[in-house]
Image (cartoon, rainbow, N blue to C red; front, side):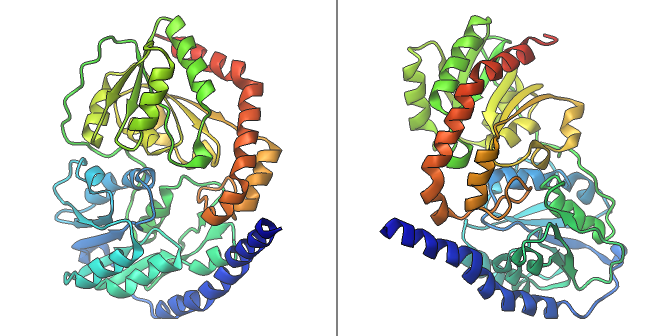
Length: 401
């Protein structure tokens, strides 16, 4: 009884009270952008791109696909990235790219921007969340551009542009039919930059020497409960890959260490583990791998930047087209497996407002009530399709060796 009442209170807060609170703040932001200015690209010498602290490593990597064209768009253009993921952005090889490191906290974002005395020509915020957009008041910039938070409050399928730039013909961002990184790419296009998806240029990274050229790397850990793949599936997949004549290597970082070592122990030393403590080493290891298998995660996005040519990725929450840019398909073979049923979609719709869209906003407190049911349905799907999934993966690995 108490749990049922608690659930109703949480639903009321997320779906009614929170949007009501955001509404007047969103209106204030629209009023802030009433006055328009004409933007000339020639007058831009520096740009600040604010990536919200709640965005994960994968989101940052998806935004980076628009950096190459931006950083080479004009001579002496300086670009400043505001992000918690300093260790990722420093891997990119561009002299005119600068990083303003922030903790994963909106409060700290405000503090750091308030303390920053530098003025910018253009501020770009690829977000439509009110708490992030209010940071624009703290940035000293002549031109500012973001997305209309009212579209998110009213759960519209497209996000319109909000800015003080007199820009015509700007396209809204389509939540249901767009690559997530286009949140940034679209804003840059509205400013007049000719940007398209390109794999960013990385600093020179030495290759890690693997024991065999037929090494398949698995990253079995997922910190997001909604992207977890059950242990028994990974175990059966490992044995099947080994029987095919490949070596299996379990890659893990500090966060995944305990989970991964227990997983390795459960396989009775038939697989090995390798530890990575930074993005450069992860890319080193992946560069010499034959293939990579993982769930939709930051690790997937790192593998897309590496030299590995074959990637298998499991998707449970969003569609692959929202996470994998088209440009990577030109030099990689990618196998995506979407774990989905009408029942699973129904469960996701209860704990999220944007089921299967590029922006998957789920409510943590509400997720607690449905996570058991969600995991049970994931297990049912995988048990029913396990043989087919493994067969597809093995055929993919064998293809054009």
